[in-house]
Image (cartoon, protein in one colour):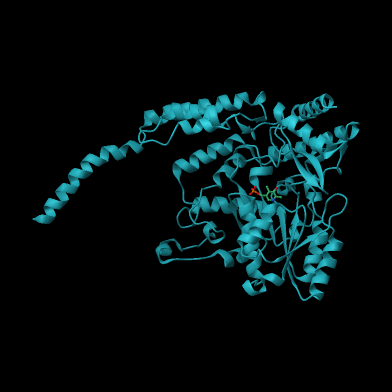
Length: 483
Ligand SMILES: *Cc1c(COP(=O)(O)O)cnc(C)c1O
């Protein structure tokens, strides 16, 4: 009876292990206590935002975090929250501040956090339709909603990505395959984009095996929008030289300046020459909710693919991008793959699976963090907040324009305001450093036409007139003290 004896031993071992392993199942009373502790922490954090600095730089750059190592027994929730409080949540950029206008801010609407909480508790598998028809329907519903904003037809498809970089990569891969750009052809394949296109497009091209493709930097006009005439000439020259133009990347809201490329004119050129027309609207896409944005982005409906970042202009916390392709079947051609161990999950009646439209298989159920805020608030306050940002940007631009101290860039297409202190690059750099030292407000800089340029990107749902007024007051005050 050797077998019998073996299972007895194994059962003894399991009796010992089970109560130890069960510690991972938190009892209801502990769940409530922990949730309350986390809720109290989050509430304190949010309540303090009105007065919190937009930027804090500590001498040790959060190195104290490492004094709490990952250990056998753990530090416990209270100690862990204390570490967060001391070393994480008050250092560096405070992207939840209304006075944070650096880079392209996000925001973090609260209901999105609740969506993340529920997504993690229920752990629905949003990769394939079979696994969670409801989760996949929800994500595809959101994609269709965005496709509707863009003005795409019913056969549009796409997926919710972790961010704009991944969505741009998926678009590039899809376009590459539609145009049949294979290894040997890469050095003759030409991509058109302006100097203001986001650097993740360059990265996407490299990751997609197109690093040796020809990148044609199309000139921009005085408002830093791609010159569609110059695009047409460049394509004609390249065709004459025996090259293969195949992709044009326009920006609907460049990160640098918020400028919107002339999408309809670019669509004409792309149509004429059979190029894939990709619009990177990671920053600007959700302005389509507003009348102003719809006018500025006219022509986007003629794109083959569009990237939008809900973690920017839909004010979600980081971790939400989206790719929408006019003909959804094309994205699947590049990303559909299968395996024997997935045979039970194949049935796709009803909805396409996100896993068949992206590089990911298992993924965060990220639809819920977008769906819940939209269901709780409705679309209207998002539209109103975006309209408010558009007006705030105009207000900041007008105020800076009226100041003797500063010179402004072009009137903002969307919500990025570029300006400079009249004077040297060095003076501008010193002023920005003073703003960062001060920390009450935060904005960042860029280089345009070789000149150090300051920029406000007004994107947070928490940015209102008082915040932007303070930003300009701090700027004037520090500029005056550096005269
Ligand atoms: C932010 C941004 C990206 C990159 O998106 P991530 O979400 O940061 O990966 C791409 N393009 C534009 C225009 C952007 O503003």
